[in-house]
Length: 321
Image 1 (cartoon, rainbow, N blue to C red):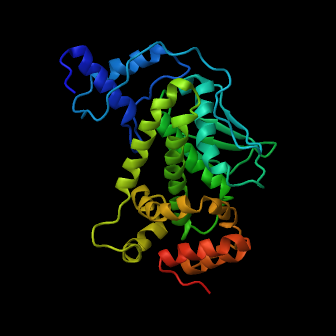
Image 2: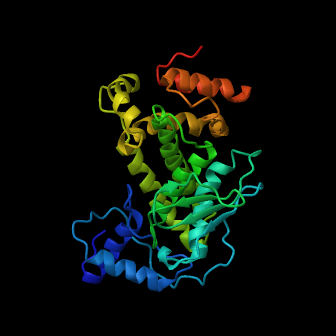
Image 3: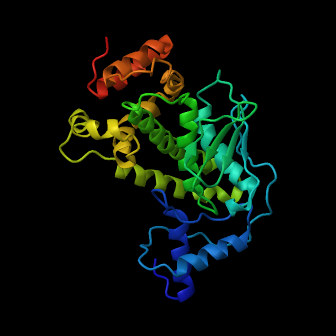
């Protein structure tokens, strides 16, 4: 499709800015409860950015509906309380922020039917990180590094930190911390792919339905970046990279390679997400080999998850007793 006017080109650039965000710096998403003014600002911003390739066409613009007080996307039946901090630092409607965070967490939370969770307090800046220190009533504090209308980035960062909470993260030996980081990177990819599907039919706001394409594009980009080098097997890749990852667990591009390799297992049998509850249940006071670390996880997990953990071990070429 060829559009000839300056205005049309600007709208196309806005579409790219809204729909093609990836990595840790996605472009603004179309406004939901924020209305047309926010979208116009995004268009004005995108029109001044050179070098964008046109991959999507923005649907015809119409007045955004008034904010919906109660978004249509909810959590599974068991309770999860997510409280975004009441601060202007978000640069977006608090209701919209919560709707995105709830959606991202909900794609994981549904697989933890017996888990109880204290409230999660979420701040827009100072992270991404989940604090070890808990609130007076056991509340978790998650700090992101995002704001405005970067909904894909919200989902990516919050799903990662939420997974740390589900893993019962704790301080201790760092030698195998890279694996938890890989699982949390996996949680981000898994959640965004699931959101892309669910938002097609049940988005937080009706006029966010088309944003499912941006979510899918964002996830596709993460998967693409996490591919093994051509001709390399995962066990061989681990042998080459494990020494560095054992010392520095938060090398995101390396964590992502493991995440993408594990993604088919978790998408085929997502009920086994519940197994991460036991990931840190073993003794972490001393240094353990990765094989012992996985064996401890398998030993602590309920019987229904043991076979799945062994499948992960086989994929990583780790022999468990």
